[in-house]
Each structure stands twice: as structure tokens, then as C-alpha cells.
Length: 270
Image (cartoon, rainbow, N blue to C red):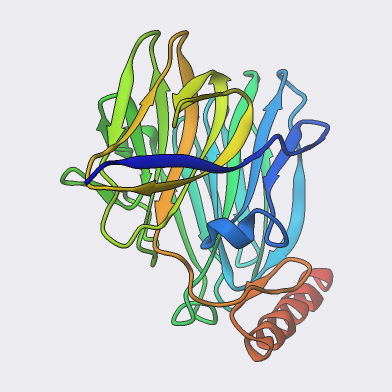
């Protein structure tokens, strides 16, 4: 069988200050679910975004601070610190509020990703995990941020059949990825330099891929490049959207948003 890899969509995103939104539940996220929201964050030192308390339900958020440190606080009173190269996982479930801020003086490069939760977890109790840089598995030029690959497993307790990598290729270097059975969702976000895949060169953009055949996906870079890459089993539900929430049904959304309002009233009373 001959391998076929093609690019289904290329998208430069929408930039607002230090954030370029590459994926939202109402657009690209329809093709890439359970990955439904992706912000590429880039700013000089001291110029990063500040996120005050805000709510979520039905999703998990994964923050990937490549070059900076962050402090994270939840409405349950938990405060944690994540160093550059680590990860912040917040599984909102039935509802939680949280906030984060940059706590280092380095230039800012990183991502925030949302994943729609499966129906079994969208109204479960919230879960938070904070991964130190040394806990992130390294597989050649790739860091395994989510899922499992080549006998390694991410420390992130995600309830998804999904993998996520940060890949940094030196000039002339290649990376090969054997697509797991059932993973029909494939995408990458090129951030640094350039990356070649499916006969095309990508720079500072998101691409949704389709791949058929038994051979691995092949990525290379003539000049060197860094990119985020995800693969997953397609989320089987329609995305039912609230202002800060993504659920599998209107009934689940109603329950999540009711819980969000309840927590918000408690926060205002502090």
C-alpha cells in the first residue's frame, strides 16, 4: 500500500496582541476535535497575557510554557507553579474557575490548548496536574506532552486517546511518527523556523493533515524548526458551546454553566 499524506487545511490564525488564535471550537476545532482551541503565545519579556479568574466546564486546558514560568490558582484555593518546559493540566469537568500569570522575566513562547472531554468525564469533579520539565518524556527531537508513544507515557492524566508533542528539529533533521490505530485527527502548528510535510513548507501556521498507509508520517526541516503536533481518535459528539465551556449535549452544558455560576457567586463573596 502506498502512503498518502496531504494537507487538508492551512490557517494563519487571528492575532490579538501576544496571542495568535489558531483553532476555535466554531471553526478549525470541528476538524480537530477533541483538540478544539489553540492559542500560540509569543511576546517579549514582560509582555505576556494575564488571565484573571475565569470559568470552564466540559473541557480540559493544557498550558505549555516553552520559555517562561507561570503561577496557577484555582477557585478551590490551590496555587501551583510551573517552570518553563513543564505543563499545566486543568480538567474542568463539571466546573471550575482558575487564573494564571507569568512569573519570570524571560521572553514568552508557549501554547494553551483546550480538549473537549468525553461524555464520561465532562461532568466529573475537576482534576489539576502540574508537570515539571524533567517529568516530560523525551523521544529524540520530540517531547511527549500528552498520551503515549514508543513505550513512553506522559504524566498528564488525560482521559483521551490522543497524543501531543513539541518537536524541535535541527537543520536537516527529520522526525517520523507512526500513526496509532484509529487516530484520524492529525494537525501541527509550526512556530519556529519551518517544517516540511506532505511536500509543503509550513511557517507560523496551523495545518490539518490526512494520512493513509502503513508507513510513518515524515517531518523534516532544512533550516531547523519547532512545531506542536497532535493526533487523536475523533471526538464522536457534536460540540455544544457556551462562553467558556464545551459539552456533548445541551443538558450537560446547562449543568456545567449552572455550576460555574454557583462558584462565581462564592468568589464574589470572598
